[in-house]
Image (cartoon, rainbow over all chains, first blue to last red; front, side, top):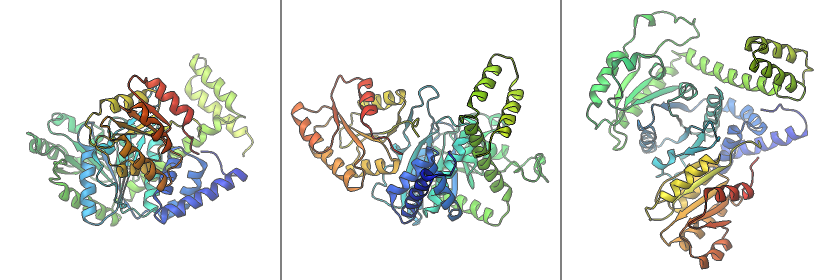
Length: 341
Length: 134
């Protein structure tokens, strides 16, 4: 993001204020525009977030991840139906991958979520992952903050759990749901590090398939707390301990098990309200700050005064003249001597 | 930002179940570097316009093979305008008789792509005519 000074920035600040106020007053077009600004990391988005972030914090942020084809979009659709029955408003951020080659993306999650065109209590937004290293989590949590400030009761963040950054997105939520399909692997899969470790709730979907209950039983057996959970985790007091998630079975296509899932989500949220895991919230804040910091730093390295030094350092690493650590130190030194703006 | 991909909604209004063309186009435009929102079959004009609004797309592409284009397309265009989406580029693809094209253009369609159109032609048209957002 660009920095905030000068007349252009004043215009951006004014536009951010107008869009934010309209979005909070219920104007869906302004809300959509704000989300685009957030996705594009514009100055308008930065001003808007400055305004909206303190107003957010009321919504329940739920991450939903899992392997392709597990039924995430169908489950989100079923959850929307359940939430609307309860009179709660719901926003969805559905992330699909961008092509690393063309930058294009096919965003297909709406196909399973179409019954809500006339319902102002539902807002669905698709987003391409755009290959951000860590930045995707920042973008989607910023989008969630916009929805939150606009007054939505619950924000569902749906991502494909195939890459580290997508797992981070789901893990940045208050409650992280990891979806599995029956017979996706044996018990050893469940104790590998990764997706299941970030889960607050594990859902075995396609519960009408043979093996669903057995898969759930295996997961329950493997996900019991291990001895290392006692006391403070290896990373110190700020580091969240490995979780021991509840395992549920749903059939999203029929809605079977979805009311129970909603109850479990609410229960998990209530447990957070007690302040039992401030560490998770702090870890999320740290990840957000870190992502913005990396982005800011990289932008300063691409600015006119330093860009040539940056290119030279990168070329030197490519040519094996210096190592990446030395290059990074050299560039940090270059930034230090540069005039602060 | 200048380097952000254009966002295109590909939708099939009405009742025909022939989505091969829409899917081929959606995938082809992805490969051309667009962010393509695909909404699937049997969309009402209201569903299409809601999706266009929530997704803040630059382009709406309608695929119709049922012959109902003279009913459905004007409704989509009118609702887009009603909800303030008058800067969205609307294109239509499918089986559209030549004599219907002027009427569709009159209600706000920027281009009609018939059988034999290449993905590249569609992509080039969009890049040349979509209004970039701030």
